[in-house]
Amino acid sequence: MKIGIIREGKIPIDKRTPLTPQNCVELMQLYPSLQIVVQPSKIRVYLDEEYKALKIPLQEDLSDCDYIFGIKEIPISDLIEGKTYFFFSHTIKQQPSNQKLLQSIVQKKCTLIDYECIRDEYGNRQVSFGRFAGIVGAYNTIRTYGHRYRLFDLKPAHLCFDYAEMRSHFKKAKLKPVKIALTGGGRVASGAIEVLEQMRIKQVNINDFLNKTFSYPVFTQVHSEHFHTKKGSKFFDKKDFFKNPQNYESHFMSFAQQADILVACAYWNPSAPLLFTKQQMRQSNFKIKVIGDITCDINGSIPSTLRSSSIDNPVYDYNPFSEDLEVPYSSEKNVTVMAIDNLPCELARDASSDFGTQLISKVFSEIFSSKPATTLLKATIVNNGNLTDSYQYLSTYAGLKV
Image 1 (tube, rainbow, N blue to C red):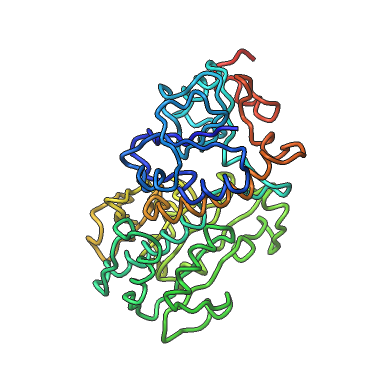
Image 2 (tube, rainbow, N blue to C red):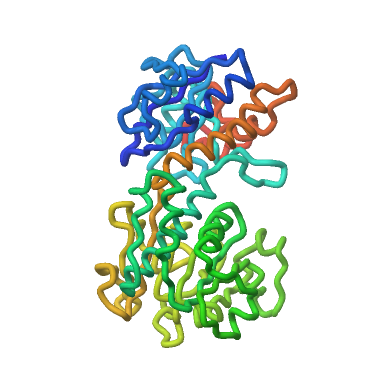
């Protein structure tokens, strides 16, 4: 078996790689029959020389590979007819920007296995960059707070060589006795909590967060059951909530009245209620002044996230009274928002290594297993140019006759 690592071609350029040089060595030690080649790249965070130093060959033409691995959407012009691809396609929600990509995959009779769809029997994603989205997102949020109140200046994450260097700057975060509300319970939230704890910000329970004052910075982790109730009742049913979120209402204002900072890590269903409304953001008791929207759902659960920000321009101000976006840190009445949509790219070396480890454990173990690759089959959107059964709903989107 021969696999190829493609050169990332989407604009803006992504420096990550699905397999680091060390990941490649580990894979070939585990599976001696496996060959790996890497398409040369001038922008990849791991240099061509780093692969060559570990005897991983560089190869421009990947047409002799059985599988081709990437990260972001592959440019249509780079698709090779009949090949099997692994990457984040961002097509399962029928995103307009990637419709032509899926149509081309069908036309060229390729096979597409989407990382986002690789899930276990309980629906949990098996490979993702969630942890590093949370790590960088929490760091950027604290950095934003430091800038807003001129308390400290942390080095931008993307200028750090790796996570180890970024951690060396944690001690510079001299926070006032602020309260931080963190939503979510998955990998993103875990990554964010990892940073807050290493910054020596103490975690407190929900009740203490809502009812006590502290002489030091604290955070609390907020789950759906902490601020949702079924409409017309005081009850919350987790299974019903995830099945019928439109039947619930949010009471997040109890946290917004206490928190200075919001770190948003929770998945949001468009049918679910907003965390809070634009009207509530105008109320005098709405205390949040810095929002790190790691989920970055545009016009989603957080009404001030009107657009994504970028690594070079990471924050903007939201004026709750005019409902307009303004220059960051321009007014005390504004809420400062960090909403970068490609956070793991800021620590591309570590994020790539972590992702590659997941691929080895969850994907290659199944590729080389003697048992049927059921997880990968379920993640296959297109097989030799045909939509698989689970993704027939994409027929019109994919340009197929229904």
